[in-house]
Image (cartoon, rainbow, N blue to C red; front, top):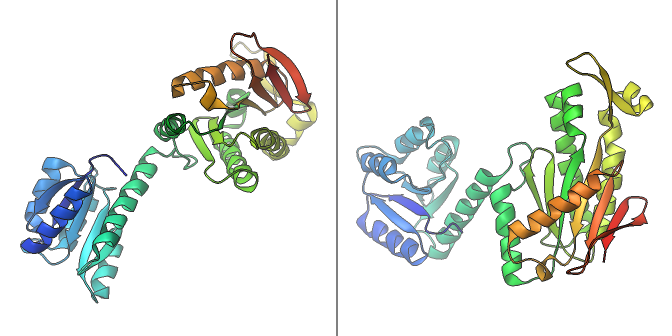
Length: 329
Protein backbone atom coordinates (compact mmCIF):
# COMPACT_ATOMS: atom_id res chain seq x y z
CA UNK A 1 0.00 0.00 0.00
CA UNK A 2 1.14 3.56 -0.76
CA UNK A 3 2.31 5.44 2.40
CA UNK A 4 -0.18 8.20 3.33
CA UNK A 5 -1.89 8.13 -0.02
CA UNK A 6 -4.36 10.97 -0.48
CA UNK A 7 -7.95 9.98 -1.16
CA UNK A 8 -10.68 12.39 -2.22
CA UNK A 9 -14.16 11.37 -1.05
CA UNK A 10 -17.00 13.06 -2.95
CA UNK A 11 -20.47 12.30 -1.56
CA UNK A 12 -23.40 14.54 -0.68
CA UNK A 13 -24.57 12.39 2.25
CA UNK A 14 -22.90 13.63 5.50
CA UNK A 15 -23.11 10.28 7.31
CA UNK A 16 -21.48 8.47 4.36
CA UNK A 17 -18.67 11.04 4.37
CA UNK A 18 -18.17 10.57 8.12
CA UNK A 19 -18.01 6.78 7.79
CA UNK A 20 -15.58 6.92 4.88
CA UNK A 21 -13.39 9.51 6.59
CA UNK A 22 -13.18 7.36 9.72
CA UNK A 23 -12.44 4.13 7.82
CA UNK A 24 -9.82 5.63 5.52
CA UNK A 25 -8.16 7.63 8.28
CA UNK A 26 -7.89 4.52 10.45
CA UNK A 27 -6.34 2.69 7.47
CA UNK A 28 -3.60 5.32 7.28
CA UNK A 29 -4.78 7.44 4.37
CA UNK A 30 -4.97 11.21 4.12
CA UNK A 31 -8.63 12.03 3.43
CA UNK A 32 -10.03 15.05 1.56
CA UNK A 33 -13.80 15.59 1.63
CA UNK A 34 -16.19 17.10 -0.92
CA UNK A 35 -19.97 17.46 -0.55
CA UNK A 36 -20.87 17.89 -4.23
CA UNK A 37 -19.45 17.55 -7.72
CA UNK A 38 -18.32 21.14 -8.08
CA UNK A 39 -16.45 21.03 -4.77
CA UNK A 40 -14.94 17.69 -5.81
CA UNK A 41 -13.29 19.31 -8.84
CA UNK A 42 -12.03 22.20 -6.70
CA UNK A 43 -10.50 19.84 -4.12
CA UNK A 44 -9.08 17.70 -6.90
CA UNK A 45 -7.15 20.66 -8.32
CA UNK A 46 -6.06 21.83 -4.86
CA UNK A 47 -4.83 18.53 -3.38
CA UNK A 48 -3.97 16.26 -6.35
CA UNK A 49 -5.19 13.04 -4.67
CA UNK A 50 -3.95 9.53 -5.46
CA UNK A 51 -7.49 8.11 -5.73
CA UNK A 52 -11.07 9.38 -5.85
CA UNK A 53 -14.14 7.78 -4.25
CA UNK A 54 -16.92 9.35 -6.29
CA UNK A 55 -20.65 9.15 -5.59
CA UNK A 56 -22.90 9.01 -8.63
CA UNK A 57 -25.80 11.16 -7.37
CA UNK A 58 -24.61 14.62 -6.21
CA UNK A 59 -25.89 18.20 -6.58
CA UNK A 60 -24.40 20.80 -8.95
CA UNK A 61 -22.40 18.16 -10.87
CA UNK A 62 -23.18 14.46 -10.68
CA UNK A 63 -20.48 11.80 -10.50
CA UNK A 64 -20.58 11.09 -14.23
CA UNK A 65 -19.87 14.76 -15.05
CA UNK A 66 -17.00 14.87 -12.55
CA UNK A 67 -15.58 11.65 -14.00
CA UNK A 68 -15.79 13.14 -17.50
CA UNK A 69 -13.79 16.20 -16.39
CA UNK A 70 -11.20 13.97 -14.71
CA UNK A 71 -10.68 11.96 -17.89
CA UNK A 72 -10.50 15.06 -20.11
CA UNK A 73 -7.69 16.65 -18.08
CA UNK A 74 -4.21 15.44 -19.02
CA UNK A 75 -3.07 15.82 -15.40
CA UNK A 76 -5.78 13.49 -14.07
CA UNK A 77 -6.30 11.25 -17.08
CA UNK A 78 -4.95 8.17 -15.30
CA UNK A 79 -6.17 9.03 -11.80
CA UNK A 80 -7.93 5.97 -10.32
CA UNK A 81 -11.62 6.51 -9.66
CA UNK A 82 -13.93 4.20 -7.71
CA UNK A 83 -17.62 5.01 -8.18
CA UNK A 84 -20.10 4.75 -5.31
CA UNK A 85 -23.49 3.54 -6.53
CA UNK A 86 -26.74 2.43 -4.90
CA UNK A 87 -27.13 -1.33 -4.80
CA UNK A 88 -29.07 -2.54 -7.83
CA UNK A 89 -28.15 0.42 -10.06
CA UNK A 90 -26.52 -1.75 -12.71
CA UNK A 91 -27.08 0.88 -15.43
CA UNK A 92 -25.15 3.44 -13.36
CA UNK A 93 -22.28 1.02 -12.85
CA UNK A 94 -22.09 0.26 -16.56
CA UNK A 95 -22.24 3.96 -17.44
CA UNK A 96 -19.45 4.71 -14.95
CA UNK A 97 -17.20 1.94 -16.23
CA UNK A 98 -17.77 3.05 -19.84
CA UNK A 99 -16.93 6.60 -18.79
CA UNK A 100 -13.54 5.55 -17.43
CA UNK A 101 -14.19 4.53 -13.82
CA UNK A 102 -11.70 1.91 -12.61
CA UNK A 103 -14.06 0.17 -10.19
CA UNK A 104 -17.29 0.61 -8.28
CA UNK A 105 -18.61 -0.09 -4.78
CA UNK A 106 -22.32 -0.52 -4.09
CA UNK A 107 -23.93 1.27 -1.14
CA UNK A 108 -24.46 0.24 1.57
CA UNK A 109 -20.90 -1.06 1.30
CA UNK A 110 -18.99 -3.62 3.29
CA UNK A 111 -16.24 -1.77 5.16
CA UNK A 112 -13.57 -4.41 4.70
CA UNK A 113 -14.35 -4.87 1.01
CA UNK A 114 -14.11 -1.14 0.36
CA UNK A 115 -10.69 -0.89 2.04
CA UNK A 116 -9.42 -3.90 0.08
CA UNK A 117 -10.62 -2.38 -3.21
CA UNK A 118 -8.94 0.94 -2.36
CA UNK A 119 -5.65 -0.74 -1.39
CA UNK A 120 -5.65 -2.97 -4.49
CA UNK A 121 -6.37 -0.04 -6.79
CA UNK A 122 -3.55 2.05 -5.30
CA UNK A 123 -1.07 -0.83 -5.56
CA UNK A 124 -2.08 -1.55 -9.16
CA UNK A 125 -1.73 2.08 -10.20
CA UNK A 126 1.63 2.40 -8.47
CA UNK A 127 2.89 -0.71 -10.27
CA UNK A 128 1.66 0.69 -13.60
CA UNK A 129 3.42 4.01 -12.99
CA UNK A 130 6.68 2.26 -12.15
CA UNK A 131 6.52 -0.33 -14.94
CA UNK A 132 8.79 -0.11 -17.96
CA UNK A 133 6.60 1.07 -20.87
CA UNK A 134 8.16 -1.38 -23.36
CA UNK A 135 7.88 -4.62 -21.39
CA UNK A 136 5.42 -3.79 -18.61
CA UNK A 137 7.87 -5.22 -16.08
CA UNK A 138 8.62 -3.47 -12.76
CA UNK A 139 11.14 -0.63 -13.15
CA UNK A 140 13.96 0.77 -11.04
CA UNK A 141 11.90 1.92 -8.04
CA UNK A 142 10.20 -1.46 -7.73
CA UNK A 143 13.52 -3.29 -8.14
CA UNK A 144 15.17 -1.28 -5.38
CA UNK A 145 12.16 -1.77 -3.13
CA UNK A 146 12.21 -5.55 -3.68
CA UNK A 147 15.94 -5.84 -2.96
CA UNK A 148 15.66 -3.60 0.11
CA UNK A 149 12.81 -5.70 1.47
CA UNK A 150 14.73 -8.94 1.08
CA UNK A 151 17.87 -7.49 2.63
CA UNK A 152 15.84 -6.12 5.53
CA UNK A 153 14.14 -9.47 6.10
CA UNK A 154 17.49 -11.26 5.71
CA UNK A 155 15.82 -13.88 3.54
CA UNK A 156 18.08 -16.03 1.31
CA UNK A 157 18.10 -14.96 -2.32
CA UNK A 158 20.23 -14.68 -5.44
CA UNK A 159 20.46 -11.76 -7.86
CA UNK A 160 21.09 -11.67 -11.60
CA UNK A 161 21.94 -8.79 -13.89
CA UNK A 162 21.20 -9.58 -17.55
CA UNK A 163 22.48 -7.51 -20.44
CA UNK A 164 22.31 -8.09 -24.22
CA UNK A 165 25.75 -7.93 -25.85
CA UNK A 166 26.31 -5.86 -29.01
CA UNK A 167 22.80 -4.44 -28.79
CA UNK A 168 23.70 -0.95 -30.03
CA UNK A 169 25.20 -2.32 -33.25
CA UNK A 170 22.16 -4.53 -33.74
CA UNK A 171 19.83 -1.57 -33.13
CA UNK A 172 21.77 0.69 -35.49
CA UNK A 173 21.80 -1.96 -38.22
CA UNK A 174 18.23 -3.23 -38.09
CA UNK A 175 16.41 -0.25 -36.57
CA UNK A 176 14.58 0.48 -33.33
CA UNK A 177 11.57 -1.71 -34.09
CA UNK A 178 13.67 -4.84 -34.28
CA UNK A 179 15.68 -3.69 -31.28
CA UNK A 180 12.43 -3.44 -29.31
CA UNK A 181 11.53 -6.95 -30.51
CA UNK A 182 14.83 -8.26 -29.15
CA UNK A 183 14.21 -6.61 -25.77
CA UNK A 184 10.64 -7.89 -25.71
CA UNK A 185 11.84 -11.39 -26.56
CA UNK A 186 14.33 -11.38 -23.70
CA UNK A 187 11.63 -10.18 -21.30
CA UNK A 188 9.42 -13.06 -22.46
CA UNK A 189 12.21 -15.59 -21.94
CA UNK A 190 12.94 -14.30 -18.44
CA UNK A 191 9.31 -14.41 -17.32
CA UNK A 192 8.68 -17.78 -18.92
CA UNK A 193 11.78 -19.46 -17.46
CA UNK A 194 11.20 -17.99 -14.00
CA UNK A 195 7.58 -19.11 -14.06
CA UNK A 196 8.44 -22.64 -15.20
CA UNK A 197 11.57 -23.29 -13.18
CA UNK A 198 11.69 -20.68 -10.45
CA UNK A 199 10.15 -20.42 -7.01
CA UNK A 200 7.02 -18.58 -5.79
CA UNK A 201 7.88 -14.93 -5.23
CA UNK A 202 10.73 -14.75 -7.76
CA UNK A 203 10.97 -11.27 -9.24
CA UNK A 204 11.78 -10.05 -12.77
CA UNK A 205 12.53 -6.35 -13.27
CA UNK A 206 13.46 -4.18 -16.26
CA UNK A 207 16.11 -1.57 -15.45
CA UNK A 208 15.78 -0.02 -18.90
CA UNK A 209 17.05 -0.57 -22.43
CA UNK A 210 18.45 -4.09 -22.70
CA UNK A 211 19.22 -4.43 -18.96
CA UNK A 212 17.18 -6.68 -16.65
CA UNK A 213 17.31 -7.98 -13.09
CA UNK A 214 16.08 -11.24 -11.56
CA UNK A 215 15.71 -11.79 -7.82
CA UNK A 216 15.21 -15.48 -7.09
CA UNK A 217 15.93 -18.34 -4.72
CA UNK A 218 19.51 -19.49 -4.25
CA UNK A 219 18.93 -23.12 -5.15
CA UNK A 220 17.54 -22.77 -8.70
CA UNK A 221 19.53 -19.65 -9.62
CA UNK A 222 22.25 -21.31 -11.72
CA UNK A 223 19.76 -23.52 -13.54
CA UNK A 224 17.58 -20.49 -14.27
CA UNK A 225 20.56 -18.54 -15.64
CA UNK A 226 21.71 -21.43 -17.84
CA UNK A 227 18.21 -22.04 -19.20
CA UNK A 228 17.74 -18.35 -19.95
CA UNK A 229 20.99 -18.23 -21.93
CA UNK A 230 20.09 -21.35 -23.90
CA UNK A 231 16.60 -20.12 -24.79
CA UNK A 232 17.81 -16.61 -25.58
CA UNK A 233 20.45 -17.93 -28.00
CA UNK A 234 17.89 -20.16 -29.70
CA UNK A 235 15.43 -17.31 -30.19
CA UNK A 236 17.92 -14.68 -31.33
CA UNK A 237 18.43 -16.63 -34.56
CA UNK A 238 15.03 -15.45 -35.76
CA UNK A 239 15.88 -11.78 -35.24
CA UNK A 240 18.97 -11.69 -37.48
CA UNK A 241 18.90 -11.65 -41.27
CA UNK A 242 19.85 -14.94 -42.92
CA UNK A 243 22.97 -13.51 -44.58
CA UNK A 244 24.21 -12.13 -41.27
CA UNK A 245 23.63 -15.47 -39.56
CA UNK A 246 25.56 -17.20 -42.32
CA UNK A 247 28.43 -14.72 -42.00
CA UNK A 248 28.41 -14.94 -38.21
CA UNK A 249 28.44 -11.15 -37.80
CA UNK A 250 26.82 -7.88 -38.83
CA UNK A 251 28.59 -5.76 -41.43
CA UNK A 252 28.45 -2.06 -40.58
CA UNK A 253 29.88 0.89 -42.46
CA UNK A 254 31.25 3.66 -40.25
CA UNK A 255 30.93 7.39 -40.89
CA UNK A 256 34.37 7.38 -42.49
CA UNK A 257 33.29 4.68 -44.94
CA UNK A 258 35.16 1.82 -43.29
CA UNK A 259 33.45 -1.55 -42.98
CA UNK A 260 33.47 -3.15 -39.52
CA UNK A 261 32.13 -6.45 -38.26
CA UNK A 262 29.88 -6.59 -35.20
CA UNK A 263 29.20 -9.93 -33.48
CA UNK A 264 25.67 -11.32 -33.40
CA UNK A 265 23.58 -10.75 -30.28
CA UNK A 266 24.51 -12.70 -27.18
CA UNK A 267 23.64 -12.47 -23.50
CA UNK A 268 25.75 -11.79 -20.41
CA UNK A 269 24.29 -12.90 -17.08
CA UNK A 270 25.99 -11.76 -13.86
CA UNK A 271 24.89 -13.92 -10.93
CA UNK A 272 25.48 -13.48 -7.20
CA UNK A 273 24.09 -16.18 -4.88
CA UNK A 274 23.47 -15.65 -1.16
CA UNK A 275 23.16 -11.90 -1.56
CA UNK A 276 21.77 -11.40 1.96
CA UNK A 277 25.07 -12.54 3.51
CA UNK A 278 27.18 -10.00 1.64
CA UNK A 279 25.37 -6.67 1.28
CA UNK A 280 23.47 -4.21 3.43
CA UNK A 281 22.20 -1.91 0.66
CA UNK A 282 20.90 -2.42 -2.92
CA UNK A 283 23.60 -0.09 -4.28
CA UNK A 284 26.34 -2.41 -2.99
CA UNK A 285 24.75 -5.36 -4.74
CA UNK A 286 24.33 -3.33 -7.91
CA UNK A 287 28.02 -2.37 -7.94
CA UNK A 288 29.09 -6.00 -7.50
CA UNK A 289 26.82 -7.15 -10.31
CA UNK A 290 28.21 -4.41 -12.57
CA UNK A 291 31.76 -5.67 -11.95
CA UNK A 292 30.71 -9.20 -12.83
CA UNK A 293 29.03 -7.97 -15.99
CA UNK A 294 32.27 -6.32 -17.13
CA UNK A 295 34.07 -9.65 -16.74
CA UNK A 296 31.36 -11.42 -18.70
CA UNK A 297 31.55 -8.91 -21.55
CA UNK A 298 35.17 -9.91 -22.11
CA UNK A 299 34.04 -13.38 -23.17
CA UNK A 300 32.70 -14.14 -26.64
CA UNK A 301 29.16 -15.41 -26.91
CA UNK A 302 26.57 -15.82 -24.17
CA UNK A 303 27.92 -16.47 -20.67
CA UNK A 304 26.88 -16.68 -17.05
CA UNK A 305 29.40 -15.21 -14.62
CA UNK A 306 28.73 -16.57 -11.14
CA UNK A 307 30.47 -15.09 -8.13
CA UNK A 308 31.52 -17.45 -5.35
CA UNK A 309 34.13 -15.12 -3.91
CA UNK A 310 34.99 -15.18 -0.22
CA UNK A 311 35.66 -11.81 1.47
CA UNK A 312 39.24 -10.67 0.94
CA UNK A 313 40.02 -13.21 -1.77
CA UNK A 314 40.68 -12.03 -5.31
CA UNK A 315 38.27 -13.48 -7.89
CA UNK A 316 39.40 -16.17 -10.27
CA UNK A 317 37.63 -17.02 -13.51
CA UNK A 318 36.84 -20.71 -13.68
CA UNK A 319 34.87 -22.65 -16.33
CA UNK A 320 31.68 -24.31 -15.13
CA UNK A 321 30.15 -25.65 -18.37
CA UNK A 322 29.45 -24.56 -21.93
CA UNK A 323 27.43 -21.55 -20.87
CA UNK A 324 28.95 -20.67 -17.49
CA UNK A 325 31.99 -18.93 -16.17
CA UNK A 326 32.46 -18.87 -12.40
CA UNK A 327 34.21 -16.64 -9.94
CA UNK A 328 35.59 -18.55 -7.02
CA UNK A 329 37.85 -17.77 -4.16
